[in-house]
Length: 281
Image 1 (cartoon, rainbow, N blue to C red):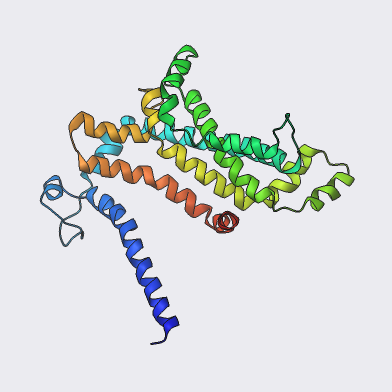
Image 2 (cartoon, rainbow, N blue to C red):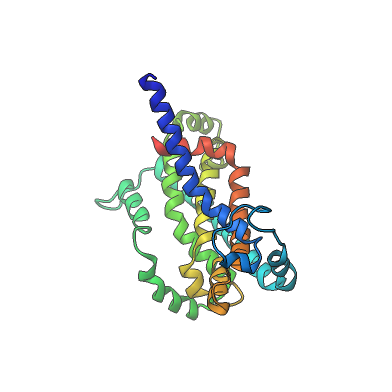
C-alpha cells in the first residue's frame, strides 16, 4: 500500500469518526422523541423496532394537546430570527460596501480603525451589558416584545455581517462600478443593481450565520422576554424547570427547533459552497 493511498484511507477514517461524533447526538435526540417513557430510562436503546417500538405520543402532545404553548414560541423564533438576520444582512452589506469603496478619515482614525471597532463589539461577553440592556428595554417599553428582540439581535449580528461582506466586496473589481458610474449610475444603484447580484453566495452565507445566532441565542431571550416574545430555546429550557427532565418532550422540541436551520441550510447549499470559500482564504 503506497503512502498516498494510506493517507487517503486515514483521512476518510477520521472524517467518518468526526461525522459519527457530530451526528450521533442528533440521532439519539430524534429517536428519543419516539421512545416510550419507560424505554428512555431503561438504558441505551437506539434502533427503532429492534430495541424499542416507536410511538407518536409525545409528538401528538406537542402538536395537539400543547399546540398553543409550542406554536407561539416557534412563530416568535421564526419572525425574530428571520427579520433580524435580514436587517443585519442589509445594513451590514451597506456598511461593508462603504468601508470598501470609500475612504473615511476622523483625525488619526481611518477605515481600518472603524472596522476593528465594529468587530470588537462581538468580542465583549454579552452578559457584561445584560443588566444595562434590561434597564434600557424597561424604560423604552421594549421588554418582552418582538421589536425589542429584533433590535438587539440585529445589533449583535451587524459586526458579523460587516466582517463577512467586506471580505467578499473587496474581491469585486472596482472597474465594474466605474463603468456603471460612467453610464450615470449612483452609488445606491451600483450597490443594489450591480454589486449585490454579484454577491448572492456571500449574502446567503451571511444570512445563515446571522440566522443561526438569532435562532439559538439564549441569554438575551431569557433576560428580555418572559411570555409574549418567548422563543424556542426558552421553551425548551422551561420543560426541564417546570416538570423535571422530560427528555421525550425536550427531544421533540429540539428536533422541531433544529428543522428550520437544516431546511434553510439545504435550500441555500449551492450558494453556501461558493459563499464560504473566500472566508477560508
